[in-house]
Length: 149
Image (cartoon, rainbow, N blue to C red; front, side, top):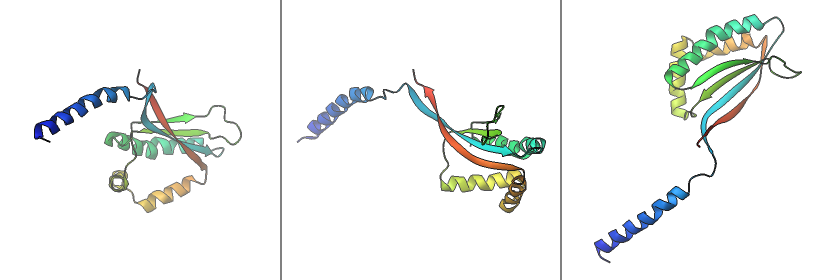
């Protein structure tokens, strides 16, 4: 086979493939967007102000830094106004575009600790103190879906 024939066959295959690529688009009217993590927090009676002060200082500082770095898209605090027995009082909600791989996660952790002017041991100790009046009930991970049409 000549070079011209091989090139012509390749061009024909490409030309036939292009219309099929357009047809192969998803039938779904939505595309996946940011991940949304929701941390569920139960606060002991009499400690709402104490935990709110922590959120306003330490948690907000860390989230603002992560947002500034582009690691997260947004964050919010949601209060459960009508909490039933066993439900969280506070939901800490964070949007992020993608998970970091191991190397990126380690790089971010180093930068984060420098920004917070803290060590992992200090942060663990602080979390332990908060555990005396708040319980981390767990978390949920969602995926936001955006309309495509």
